[in-house]
Image (tube, rainbow, N blue to C red; front, side, top):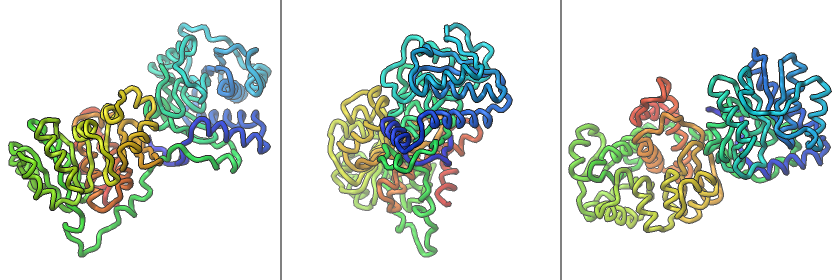
Length: 495
């Protein structure tokens, strides 16, 4: 899902609450902000579901529930058939949320307690105003049951709009707290929450829309938690080449990997590096793979390497190393791993190279590490669930411990360098197939060879890889192969 028109900065829930407070302190009443938020939701409904008549609004307590009551009132006044199903007794509401309920009731909106069962059997659209950004523990009880019922209705074709954030989604991390609403549209307010764009966020949010509700300028001076990357610098980083340039001007990538039975991984990585513009690409692999692979792709230079000493001439000629695709963890793998790290060349490490790094940790500033959550967990001495529950913290911890630039793969891939974190949202579920990570490694290594900095190569490489996957998925996500990315990659790197 493209988010080109949205702000780039992503904030924590605490920051957004402080922005809200500053705006109110600056003279905008809280109920005015609530009404603006509801109006933004109604505008989204008019745009996405202009003909829907039967709408149920699920309301919790607090301001998120208050937003829901105002949405219901506005829809009712516009002639829609609206019902509020509340999970918190209106008499327990306070402040602006209580005002919102009172105004909805006065306008004639039907407000009844949610009692479970098949409450949404006749609903055409659900508005989720159950739980806001303050949720910090797994949902339970009636809220969990209501979310499950909403998701069941969504599965049978009922539309779902989430107010500010899908209920059950952690605003700061994108983790699903037990169970989260699956929305078609999420309308976010004041500032974008970081969790909407990584982890379970992209799957739960659907299309993200945004309204700052007229927040005061002072509210936007808080530092962002992360930043969305959209390759606005693509044309600058990959400018047209001078007419007198030659292959030696565009770097030499050496891919090291392909232990017994895994030659395809190194080959995929190498071809990706060539497709994004590396001038020369060599592959150090098992002898059994070299001849066959060279025949299949003669533009790549394959060398059979059985001893680490045989790697030295190849290391001397390379400008960038891609270490790990199909490398394995055998004695051969460990010897090549040690030789590559000792060579002093800029490098990318992926796959089993990362698993070997986890057992022989060290820190460098000139490398790019590309772990998936399982590999990240091994590098941190943690577990996959913990990494996924705190993706931003995990990415920062990896960068702090190992240095360089870290690419934490997954839905909403994170790129961390020092304290800075960037989020990339290109890509699709069809890319969950063998070889995709090897292609990403080759893309980033190929960009490093063309003298992009590690951070630029990682950010742009992740964006290109995902965008190529999106273009390749035009014929469908199922059955998408890693090699399908090569043609769109070539087009993308020639803007």
